[in-house]
Image (cartoon, rainbow, N blue to C red; front, top):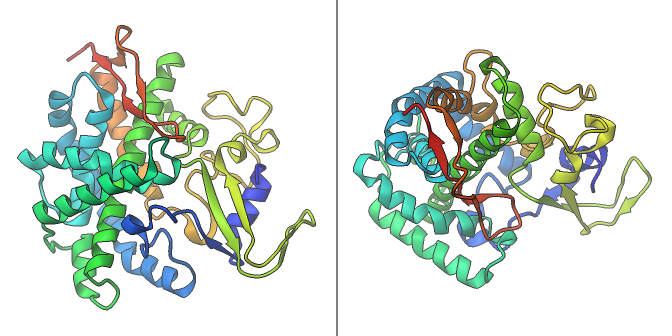
Length: 345
């Protein structure tokens, strides 16, 4: 499915089940990401306090307190800089506490974990990727115990032991760790990269962020399986048990919704009434991304990315012309390295 209308129809329909994470199931199977139906709704409700307004304000405070120390540690490369900021954010959300001197070790474990969670799109041997990810997971469990602080994932899981056994709890932690760091750090790189070619004033950063989200969805496609025979609005029939792939890259660049120049970076563009400026990057329907407000902000909090971007601009961030970026070995457009200069540091 490549058009926005087709993609949105599939994603919002309860007659299709989520089917995107087969290979990575040893790491994220049984989590809120892949559940469906009443069990999925119950899990989302249990996790909702992590995305409440007070929680979002707390995450903003974590980023504000963390960004400068991460800049000092990784001033020359935006990938580890972004990952270290969002890693501390994830740690506070999950219940790992203040990482401090443990940050480099968790960053080292994060690389293989992140690749394994998205193994479906890796260009390396998938068995090797999964083995490395599972080894990193075991080290994570052994070296980073959870603390059941108030309003954390660990506290929620402790209060509802019937919802998460030990294995399910580890998988939920891995999901939150990956989702909070991988996608957010990748987005930070993309928006800095786009702004290096199309500079905008600070009051347009929210537009730039939304446009970057639209152009660079974190996954190549979302897979769905029909739970019954489904006739789509255009008359096509999807048989029960049949699979459909929602091409987010194509749907987010549909000229019928985003204009004839949909492939271009043009923040603040006019869009069709039903669409959001970031397209379907956060999904739609029952599986709308639980953490969307962390990224896009609310009427009360602007979102953690805008705080980080504003600080990086104060420090004069720009790509290092002498060191080219390095793309990750995946079909997803993500970087392993994005060298930068902070000219005002």
